[in-house]
Length: 262
Image 1 (cartoon, rainbow, N blue to C red):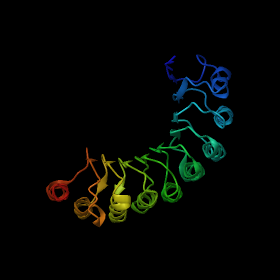
Image 2: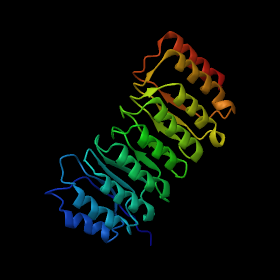
Image 3: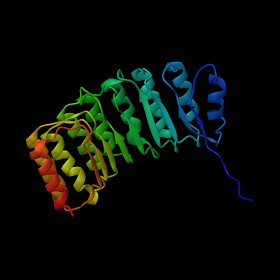
Image 4: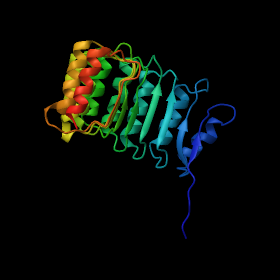
């Protein structure tokens, strides 16, 4: 007989859902528990995180883990990284807050590179700078990540964003990239061009909401879109530019790039 399994989303950590019962379900490999969100304001310190990581090392049910907005030290980030290296089913992860920083990203990057199942990584507003971006780029070159969000990391420069994009280009798996609120310059546009061309052009969607970009760089982006990195791959389906100041010349350049791909 066919049995329908109803996935369970847990969205708590605190008085209403105790630590023991929550982790016990993970340890018991409860196949109905597939997604967990730990809301801000709930208790989720190093001890709780360590219990979760220990439980997830052998868990085969959980697909998504979201604990954004919780401060996390490097040691704890390392525990998540070690867990990702052995867990076979986690597909999406978001941990840490604006204090996560380069050290936290670098520690997590080891797990991103070695995970067999991870497909989505959300590092929005995690205090990442160029050092963390370099580590992330190296991880992406070896990972299976499809969706990547590095939006609103104010310390990330054009060179750092370029390192992320070049890593994604080398890995040839990223189809969705979010860079909202970042500074996009000539180095990162050149790297995006390589990403568009990699493996016949895997990138399908790029969210560049509220990015800071100079007029000459907009023109270069238009050329990259037109040429798809010089290989005519025609991969990009959607480019989001809400809130980005393009100006008439920039809009014309991007429109020309879009027409050139038709």
